[in-house]
Length: 286
Length: 166
Image (cartoon, rainbow over all chains, first blue to last red):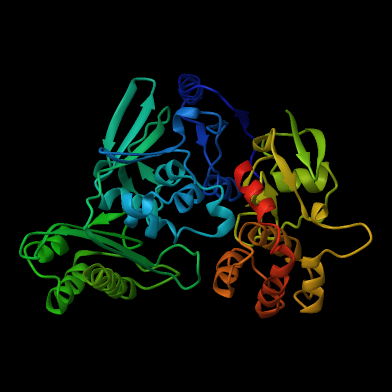
């Protein structure tokens, strides 16, 4: 369908953008890459009265890598992550997850901040944010503040952002060399949304046992989920076949997916266990 | 609103509603009807055009967002009198039947081959996974793109330039 009518503004400063968003009684919407919002408009699922284009805001650009970790500007596109060779060591899990995002043409436009703000429960970037304890920096009319990823995603397409707030950047904590990790995603066609995916990482103590295990899954709930029950299975253990089998079962038991047109709840529950199993096997073999 | 950008090397100025997609702007305002609109919500890839060197879906971009951009459409990838190597390869391999998806296939493949002239079949398949074709079954399209690589083999510099413009 053709898009509903709206006004359009393309501010050059963050305060101006916040002012514009705050000026429309909650009916203004920010547009970054537009790869989720424009389809929502085409389906008339979103009918904002004003679109505020973020493309001229320099504060939202760039990938910064420091001892504070990896900070992704909200307007960083998937393609920028694919092309940034530093990330192969600075955050290999991010790089692996992003390779599953949609298609070539969409990866040229879609943005980190847009995906996080859209909060699709099957999207990779929100899953990585939750798995890695990301901090999401936002600016609104009451100033700047940081929201923990665990508090940010509140349901399908629902976040802690207020209508006047803009995501500035997403910080992933530092990634030590030697960390074990794996990412596995399943969809029927390449580039489709995940029917289920799992991101895992852990560090190893002097005896080779897992510590600091993080397990996150997408596509099996109304938001990206951390599975603490699976992390408890892994911490203090060797990641061998017996532990992996326990983690598989714990992951299936920890989620409560719904039936939908793509898959039954039982299928997704089984699949998420398999994704955790394969991700752990990849991590242990690295 | 008024928006200015370059299309196929020509500077244009168009009066548009903010809600007009780039695809509809190209087709209706500029009469460049080679860009096809299939699904109108970012799934089929038929409307793929090249914006500042990158293949993008023109149905998922507003015309007003193209302000200041350099756009190449399927019309910009054709010669007046002769077929380009990529077009010849599509003809040779019967890589189209109804032709509806072909503009998106050609624009996408052109950027891919310009940037990665050494890409393999797996990479071609991955990139073209964003373009639906209901006639060919894709095999002939992948073969056509692979066969056209030689024509792009000595154009690494052009590919680099496209990357730099992004």
